[in-house]
Amino acid sequence: MTGFSSRVEAVSISGIREVFEAAGEDAINLGLGQPDFPTPEHAREAAVEAIQSGAVDAYTSNKGTLELREAIAEKHARDNDLHVDPEDIIATSGGSEALHIALEAHVDSAGYRPASERAQSESAGQEVILPDPGFVSYDALTRLAGGTSKPVGLREDLTMAPETVEDAITDDTAAFVVNSPANPTGAVQSPEDMREFARIAAEHDVLCISDEVYEHQVFEGEHRSPAEFDDSGNVVVVNACSKTYSMTGWRLGWITGSTDRIERMLRVHQYAQACASAPAQYAAEAALTGPQDPVDEMRETFRERRDILVDGFERMGLECPTPKGAFYAMPKVPDGWVDEVIERGVVVVPGDAFGENGAGYARISYATDTETLREAIDIMAEATAALE
Ligand SMILES: Cc1ncc(COP(=O)(O)O)c(C=O)c1O
Image: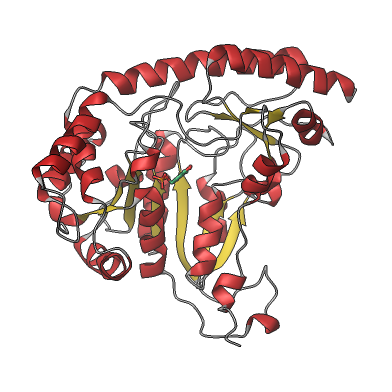
């Protein structure tokens, strides 16, 4: 029988799914990683019009329509003070595909070794330094590319220290991943950190993959991209419409980087995907060029909920670094807390689903309405009290 590749045997289905399945049907779900808002009307309409006119019946250019890439370039000029040539952008199927093609194109595997001879935690390819706890795809996509994950711990405030990354670099390092604002922590890196990440990428000649999909959900501090500080060409930026415009189902993201890196990533994208979904490209172009009020409204709503949740943790006596962005909080929780909360009908994700250093924490998503959030806080408080 044909077996399975050692690369695919090195990953498993995300632990987050298991949590959802364990919860009852009426459970309040604070486990979801997507905004609970509608996609802006003008984005939906642009897709409908494009469908009805027949404009989306054919493949677009592999990199995406020029109009979309111009809109993305304009976005980078507007938000990041960054000059990006539309030719140095690939529209992808969500931020997920952007991460995938970045790792496929830059991480070398060490060659074939049967899965039976390789522990699940072991891989022999080039190293990718990742935040731990961190978004689950970084580790899985590294393994699928045949690489080796090098998780690094975070500071007390759950940001990733540039010196920790620098210390972890070896001759085998292909890349390191920066994610700010971060999933699962809600932490936001300072501009000084971002400048340091750019310096490290240049000085050590390793790739910095900057995942900026939560860029617009910043409540305190400011979002800066390492790309702003880079002139070595060693930074690629991953972004998406998913979280900014509540368009997770549309599957539209992108990656920008130097011309030679884009050309290599395009090789992967071309054969795996051909092009991003054409209707989604039209919707994304409208979202990026249209009124940005929905983005501001979402951010303000998330900020209010963040305050309610952090206040709730304080009253429960749970320590929680104040999340400065995204829509997640990561309190330290006592043993048995996650099970106790789930049993009482609130779905939260155990911190160790995001890496070993996540043990003893839980990820709470506040992408849910205020009333439901307050109800969930009462339940979490009861669960906390029951464990005391
Ligand atoms: C940090 C981070 N990066 C990338 C993604 C992928 O986003 P997309 O839905 O655009 O593929 C997610 C989704 O949860 C995320 O949390």
